[in-house]
Amino acid sequence: MSDLKQRALHYHQFPKPGKLSVESSKPCATQADLSLAYTPGVAEPVREINRDPATAYQYTNKGNLVAVITDGTAVLGLGNMGALASKPVMEGKAVLFKRFADIDVFDIEVTAPSVESFIETVVNIAPTFGGINLEDIAAPHCFRIEKELRERLDIPVFHDDQHGTAVIVGAALLNALHLQGKKISEARIVFLGAGAAGCACARLLKVMGAQHIVMLDKQGVLRADRQDLHDMNRELATTRDIHTLADAMQDADVFIGVSSANALPAELLKTMAKNPVVFALANPDPEILPSVAHQVRDDILMATGRSDFPNQVNNALCFPYLFKGALDARAKQITIGMQVAAAEALAEIAREPVPSEVLQAYQLDSLVFGKDYIIPKPFDPRLKERVSGRVAEAAKRGQ
Image (tube, rainbow, N blue to C red):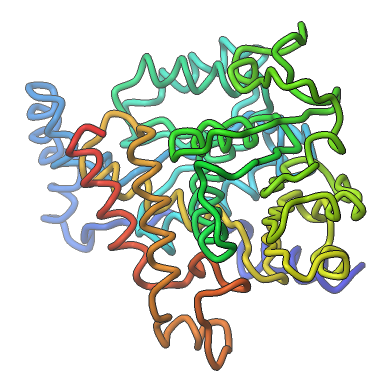
């Protein structure tokens, strides 16, 4: 057993199994406490909520409670592991919500025989929660699930694998292009991977000003004349006469990989434009290792999804604060405008002096905005107030 495997299993098993527990937020030490916590006192908030459902935000934890829900069909980079096997990941997500934004979470793993039954399950339990975080649901049915839930529910529904990734990629790309002397409106961007994350990233970048995007899946370039495209990637198809990754990478300014390990041949980096940006985000092994890329190009700026390389694109920078802002504003949806607000706030924070708490957490002497630091670290204390605040402001403005 490897050291990491042994430590991970021990971490999850001891001192008691799992990573979550439920604690009471009110005292229950006396008969008087008990009469308020349960019968007869509990009848009073029941009557108030029955009279006015909005008072549930006053008398219950609904306003600070998020459901992290999955069917286990796309767990991490492991694939369809099933609902039960996904539970450690959902518990982990809950830990991050609590640690970074002080939001409570129930993790819910659903064994659903169909997309319809999954949707109905979520709709039926939704009154408990202030928001729904969908997680590790395979494409393309994740698109339909999110769309229908957003239409049917009056609380925020957010598929983090899509939009959380998109927000972090958007923030990181704004700063990467700035450092490389380029503008998002002019940058030629290549996506390798057209699943949930890739499509969401591309759509958000278009809203943020990107105008030149080419996407590829396992069959090649998403071209407008292809007959096998689903609705979510058809709108991202190109009319250019290109067919291969090599074609797309010629003079490209940006490569964003959300695909698989070693999917980007090193020689293709040589064909990119001056001062290229490469986000190799496949986990745990990126499309190309930074050590390999830097051997080919000394003018490259790189990010990956891993914590042991600089510039980790980490969803933990987004979803706790996005939900915090949405809950604070009592938003009914998490909109594109709220996502852009989060991305811009993250980009701004990275350009500012780094607090001492961050340096201590990562055992660093210094950390300065530049090629090896383009997005904030997850333990940055500014994130909760700044990102959540900007999201709440966007929600209140109706963006």
